[in-house]
Structures are given as C-alpha cells and as structure tokens.
Amino acid sequence: MDARRTTVRDMRRANRAVLLTRIWLDGPLSRHELGQTTALSAASVSNLVGEMIAEGLVEEAGSVESDGGRPRVLLRVAPGHGYLVGADVGETRVQVELFDLSMTALAKAEYPIPGAEPDPDDVAAHLLHGLAAVTEQAGVDPAAVLGFGVAVSGTVERTVDAVVHAQTLGWDGVPLGAVLRAGTDVPIHVDNGAKTLGQAEMWFGAGRGARHAVIALVGSGVGACVVADGVGYRGAHSSAGEWGHTTIVYGGRPCRCGNRGCLEAYVGAEGVLDRFRQANRGRPAPGADEETAFGELLRSSSRTAARVLDETVGYLGAGVANLVNLFNPERVVLGGWAGLALGERHLPAIRAATARHALRQPYAQTSIELCRLGPDAVAMGAATLPMARLLGDGGGPGARLPGPRRTPAR
Image 1 (spheres, one colour):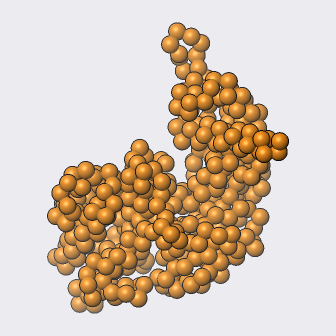
Image 2: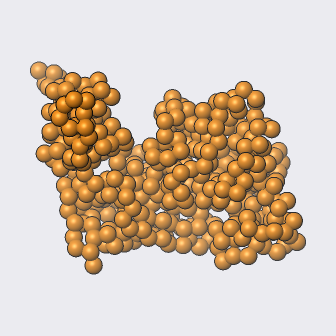
Image 3: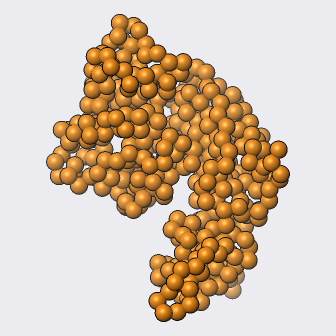
C-alpha cells in the first residue's frame, strides 16, 4: 500500500518535472503544445499546470490564435518566483551574477584574484561577499534565492562537500561546498566551469538543438564539456573534459599542471602571452591585466604578434581536430573569454586549421561555431545548477520554492 502511494507520488513529480522543463526551456507554450510535446493527456496537463499556477511557479503570458477555436493561453515560468545566483571562479577574478527565473541578469559583482594560486579561503570570502552584494543590489531577499551555483577549475567531486581538485591552482582536495555552506543558508552547487558553460550553451546558446556536441572553453586555462546523445559525459569521477591537459607537443612547453606540452600551454591566454613575451625579446604585451594584454596582442600590427597568433590558431585547430576525431560531434562550440576573442577575429583560420588535422569525414559532419552567450556564460551556466535541481524535482518541496519575496532596493 505504501509502495503504491510512493509510486504514484513519484510519477506525479516526474510528470511535473517534464512539464516544467518544457515550459522553462521552450516557453511560452500553450497547454495544447505541452500535451503534444510531452505525450501527457490533456487532463494531466491541465491538472498539473493548474497546481503550478496556484503555487505561483507558472503564470499566464498572453495568448495566440488557434485553428478555428478559442485563443490558446500561453504559459511561462514566473520570472519573479525565485532567484538564481551563479559565480565564475576564474584564474584572474571571481564574478558573481544574480538572475531571475527567466535568466535575466539583475546584478553583478567582480573581485580580482591576485597571484597564480589563490587561497581557497580568500576565494570563498569573495564568493560570499558577492552573494550578499548582488542580492542587495537587486533588492532581493536572500531567502528568495533558490541556490548559489559556483563554477571552478579542475575536478569537482559530486559529494555534499563538493571537494575540488584544481592542480593548476594548487588546490588539492578543497571542500569548497562545505566552506561556503558554513557562511550562508542559500543552497550551494559547485561544478567545473567548462561543464557549466556547456550547460548554458546547450540550453540557451550555440549548442541548442544538438545531440552530440563539444563546448570548448579557452580562457587563462582550457577545458571542454562533452555532450553525447544529449547528456553531458563526466567520466568515472567527473574529470572528463580536461582537454587543456591533453598533450599537443611531446616534451613541449611547461604547463601550469606540472606536465609539458599540454594544449593549455599553447592556446590558454597565459601561455599565449608568455610565448609572445619570449618571442618579443622579453617584452610583454602591454596591459594592466591578462585580459587587457590579450586584447592588445590581438590588435597588434607587429610581425611578432602576427606570428604568435598564427601559431596559436594552428595549435587550437589541432586541438579541436582531436575533439572531432575522438568524439565525432555534430557541433563544436568555442567559448571562454579568450576563445571568443580569438574566434571573433580568426574563426575561418581556426576552421581551416582543424580541417588540416582532422579526419575528412568526421570534420565534414561537424560545424565549428562561437558561443552565443558571451564571456559571462560560465556564471550563467553556474546559475542553472540550482535551476536544474528545481526542474528535476518538478518544483516540489526538495527544490526550495520560497515564493516571490523582494525587499526594497537601497
């Protein structure tokens, strides 16, 4: 008897999850469209949508004409029913953003990170300060925040403590989730930055509609999110996608991870700038920080800069060709702040370099595109981590649904 009740409850939650996911990703949608795309009966759709409207989770959003009948009411997830916060812990800064449930950015805070190996406690302090700052900027009650998603470098153990192993940062077994939970009541979600970028681009950006894709992140570091048959591939212990630490030159340049010849040492922003400095007789590219210097290098008219960038495009093309040969994706999406900067100027050359190194047939079946969500896509993807929990629970009690609450903006 108890088992039967549990099964019915689980089925109802699963059906709510299906409807809520469709409304959020593809809405506004009518009840008729939901029935067609989910294969649920009209009665089930009507009952479950009615529940979510009564809870304030879903709301009506206008109407469209139907074929010969009454106009069909469109439905969407209520943007102000809760809020999401996402953070991108990069090599040079911590960026925190707050979004409503339509993924509209409402507030942002940034904190520079000095040094190549930031102290985890300092990073955690920046994250908590950023969480407080963006909720205050937007006038949002912290109790209305559904969750705080944090994107980091390296491998994240998918445990309660969210233990981070980031070799390039000098982090070995840092329980970042536990540290953050000690400073806030907001639910914490931690994942690798390339994977959060991949989720954002697959849901809203250049990966949308693809079943097999690789989203490549090129910033100071380099990583990738591999999507196979619509599902992110994580490997045995979530470390799949460390594309930046595949060997591109045997015995080559030293990498921050301690090995030699890694792709990151040749196409990551830090590696590119170091290669330019060496080629330029020890004179670095001008700029107060890495992003500024990288931009100056891209705009430079010097022969040295042109040669280094030409080599970078070649290395990047070879790295993308490895992804094409290994995973046979229908789409490769190039993102990250340095990847976007390179791609905006050199995408045709990157495609040509990939074609030179990839097998002809899989390359012919692949498109190479730029991320559409811009340099803040990692933080947006991090904010989708608590949203994924909400969707998976069908907006149920486990998803922390506080209802709309706002405090006056200061």
